[in-house]
Image 1 (tube, one colour):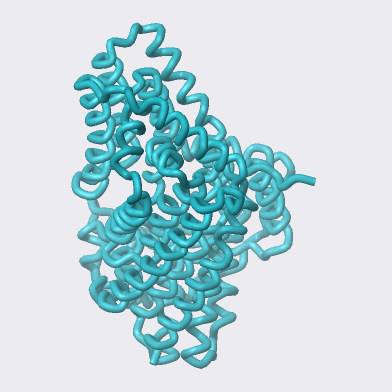
Image 2 (cartoon, helix red, strand yellow):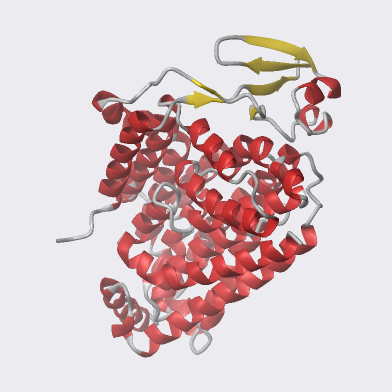
Length: 494
């Protein structure tokens, strides 16, 4: 018996969700969206639609406690659920044909992310052909000798800062091809590299401080200022990052002292090979041409991060940056046209499996939406917490958000769907709505660190680590972070 591959896991989950559409009653909330051109609210009900003037009175009429300017400024740009409007609908169970077409629909819907991954793969292929990576690693292995632990600290910390400030998540897929070889050359296994990149992003998003795709959009949907509870979020970010970095360092030190302790045996072999290669390539000169190539490669990532955080870029613009970078590197490396095309296609082909993982995960969400069970799950979750004591309520909500994340992995999607429904529950138990926002962030972010419907399988595919290996590495840290989150939420609720 062997643990199934990531694609197989996702197909099994898709089959399970298909079955749930036969078992969970179909239903939905009415939704509200703002139309700037007509300055009106569009209300979509179960069997009708109508408009209301974009005024605060209209929101009050619908029991939506969100300031009008949150809609007019564009802070809330997705349709939100209207409280107390849930209705059961005619069942729409998904059949075998729906199960078969969902992955295809998912691949089409996730085309923007998929093309980013494939273009990055092509760029990596070009880099490998120029020899810049080998020369750079030979230099880096000398520079880091005796200080390899700094690589873990700085990588995890910098990526987590991106996660907590602007939601750095899917973009980290671009970092694996360049950073994993560096971790291996430093004598670690690929699990250390994966943890530093993936957990840096995951814990950063989990403890978002000013992240517009989590903190700000959730606070807006809850009807409060995003600065409410900021001090507490900064504190929990610092605590969780210190714990996470310490956990990675302990594992990394164990593997470096005894490679047999690695959870990824093949990665130990890779690590030793990279060390051997770095030693044998120590005579390789990092020429001016190769330095320029590495500079252009690094600049692509800097431009990508600036574009997302400052210029309102998304996947199309990010992909264009890496595509342009690949062409420029090819010219500077004096590659022939046929060699360029062959290297680019081979590099893209190496990441084709990751592209399918992303599409399969998106297909699961499509099955839920088409089966009309997403809102039903949210409705029953809100009903379950009614009448609870505040301490029990907030911790139960923390775990409910973890369960909802399996079905709704998107942080922004989770915020606009759940906050209008669940944030008013805070008023009933006499706690601040910012505590609900914290429960959402911690629950959603924590479970996304292991959820097969999130980014973890795509990330594991990039580094060729089995899901069961990662779970074995992750579970002690998961339990520790869950306990910290529960303690934090309990203190805030009193």
